[in-house]
Amino acid sequence: MKGHLLAIAMFILLLLLVAAGTVRSTKLTPAKTPEGAVRSLFDRVKSSDLTGAYAYVSPASNVDKQTFFKDVNGRDGSLRTYSKLEDVDTKVLRGNGNEATVRATTKWSTAVGPMFDTRDLKVVKEEGDWKVVWQSDKQPNLPPQVIPVNYLRWDIIRRGTDDDWGAQNVESPRVRIISMNAVEKDGGVIVMGEVRNEDTVPGFVSVGATLLGKSGETLGEETSFDKISHTLLPSEISPYRIDFPKVKLAQVQSVRMQPAALLMPASADPVIGVLHQRLEKDASGRSVLRGELVNQSGMTVNIPHVLATYYDDAGRVIWVSDAYSDKALLPQTPVPFAVDVRDDLAKNVQSYRVTVNQYSIDRVQ
Figure 1 (tube, rainbow, N blue to C red):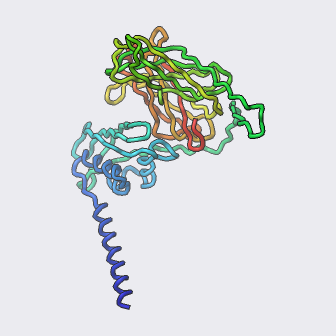
Figure 2: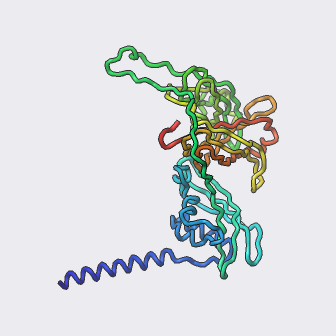
Figure 3: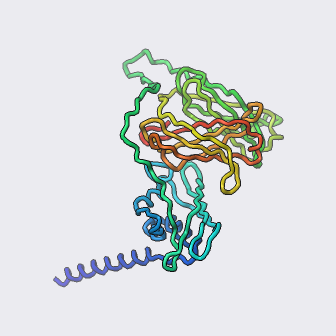
């Protein structure tokens, strides 16, 4: 009996110790400055303590805890749901004794590289402590509607074990490099241009390049990786960009291009519209291409990937840039995007074209 009582007492003591540890770990230090409130909020996010982060949110925000969690952690299988806060930089833009505006630039680590987000946050003083007025990303409630499905679709019929009609390998789709431009930027050579699917079937396209030196030696071999739309329907065109770090253009005698394609099933849905495109300066003074993406289908696009091609007055490709959106594209719901433009090239841009790759949980293409 005494043994049972001792076990129960030890169990209760263990619970008390765990509870005490939880209280200590979530105990908040009141923010005495506007910048301190913002940094404390994101420090808690960085340590995955979202409840602690929410404690720095002002009641005036009128945002509940679950909505705040979705704003920070992402929703709908977006890229943010697969990312983690790595760093935050804060700067007080203006303020007085009871109110301030703090710019927070956050760096998130993702599978496709770092992503940056900038927010100008209002911070208010409440009962001697500073709290963040959090503006939630409002999701519109669309009415039920029927969206007709009339898009093209290509399937591949695999040969069976008893079929001899498909014994021969299928010919790869025909693709062609239609433009190429090699430049030197940031201490390396960049090869960019456009590739076209000239076949009647879709293909998974990749572009590789080999730099050859004065004596025919190989200076480097690289591929476009994600600086390309890999899935090309018939007659579609994609930009590509291939980076060769630490190579000087003066060393290069010639460039050998290697386009390749594989037959793949594909469809022309979902259709993603690109609206309100314009070149402008962002809050830090950098040149960006902004616009809105609209998913015109009835299915969710979890991770949109924007590719921008910039042309000079002669129609030559002078730059290719890309950006992943950390918000999913819900049907019929506009989502803003911004893609960097090199400041030294912005003045030479006469036109541009935006294409969108899309990745969905139920299918990737």
